Image 1 (cartoon, rainbow, N blue to C red):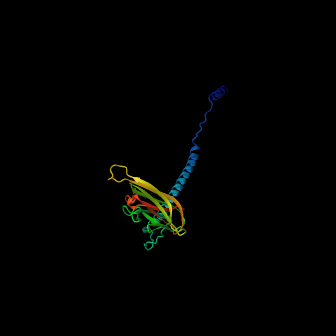
Image 2 (image 1 turned 135 degrees about the vertical axis):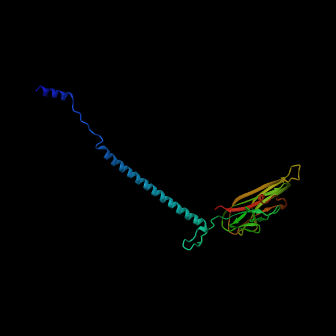
Image 3 (image 1 turned 30 degrees about the horizontal axis):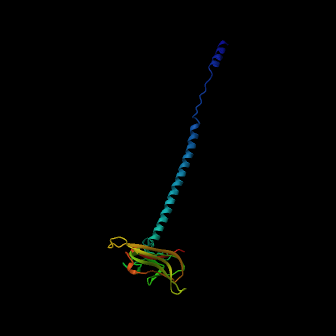
Length: 229
C-alpha cells in the first residue's frame, strides 16, 4: 500500500504531457486554398491577354481600312487584284480668292502665281464676281511710291440692282519722300477690308487714281474675298 501511495504521489508531482502535431491537418487544406487562388489568377491573366489580342486585331483592321480609303492604290480587290474606283470627297470649302498683281507698276490681277488662287469666285475683267449669295469679307492692299502726290485706293462695286459703280471702301493719302537721297524710293501701304452682303452676279474691283505710283512685286499688292457664312 505504501508503494501505491508513493506512485500516486509521483504521478501527481509529474503531470502527463500530450504532444499535438499542428501540421497533421493544416497543410492539405492550405495547399487546396492556394491551388484555387492560383487557378483564378491564371484565368484572369488569360482573359486579359485575350482582350489585348482582340483589341490589337480591331485596331489593325481599322488602320488598314483608313489607309485604303486615303490611298487609292491600296483600295484593291482581293480577288482579281484590280484597283477599285475611289469616291472622291466633295469640295465643301466656301468661296474664296486671293489675287496678286502680274508685274511691277500694273494693276492686272492674276490667280496663276503662288500663293494666289481662286475657288468659287470668278475673276472676270479684272474683277471678282460672286457665284453665291452671302456675306463676304473683301480686302485689298496696295503699295505706292512716295512722290509727294495724293494717292487714292478704292474698292468698287458693280451690281445689277443699281446703275453705275458704287464705292465700298476708300483710302486717300498724301505720300511724300522727305529723305535727301531721292534715288532710293520710299513707299507707303494702304489696306482696305470690310464685310458686305453680295448676291450672285455682283462684282468688286480695285481702283487707284494713278497707276504710275503703284510699287512693288506681286507680294506687295493683293486683292481678294472670302465668304463668311
